[in-house]
Length: 248
Image (tube, rainbow, N blue to C red; front, side, top):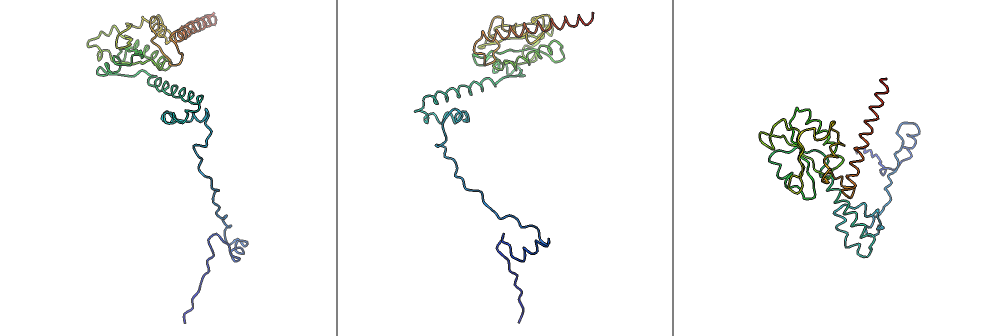
C-alpha cells in the first residue's frame, strides 16, 4: 500500500506553532500584519451639506444654474448665487483677450469689423524687420495684458491694405462698433519716446479705448492711465538726474 504524505496548510494569515518557532530562529521572515479593512463610511448626503457661501463658491457655472430652484426659500443665498454667476461670466468675457493676436486679411472683417459692440479693437499695421514696428508692438503687448477686455490684433500692412506705404509704418487703427474711431500714422504719434504709458494716454485721449474689465467706469480707467504716465515721467526724470549727478 502506497504511503501518502499530507502537508497541512493553515488558514491564510494564521500562524502555526511550528512557524512561530522558525521565526524565532530567524528561518522565516516576520509575520505580515493581519488584513484589516478600513472602517465603513457612508457617502455624504448632498442634501445634508450645509448651504452657505463656501458651498456656492465650490460650484461651477453649470451647477449654479442647476441649483436655482433649490434656493427659492433662501433669499440671501439666491442673491449670492446670482452674484457668483455674474462674476464667472465677466471673468470669461475678460479672459477672451490679453495678448496681441495675429490676423490675416481674410480674418479682418470677422475679428475687427464684426467684434462685439462693447469691445474696442486696436489694430497695428506692421512689417517684420522694422525697428519702429517692433517698439510699438512691445508696448501693445504690455497694454494687452493690463487691459484684457480691449482686443489687440496685428496684421501685415499689405495684407490689410494692398500697396500700403512702408513710410507710414507702424500705423494704429482703433475700431468700435464696426467703425474706425481713430488712426495714428508713424511712431511719432506717441511722443518722443514710445512707452506703454504714453501709448495708453494717446489711445484714451478722446475715447474709452482701454478696458481692464475691473475698474467699473471709463473715468477710473483714464485716471489710472494718466497716473501711470505721470509716474513713468517722474521716474525717468529722477533716473536722468541721478545719472547726471554721478557723472559730475
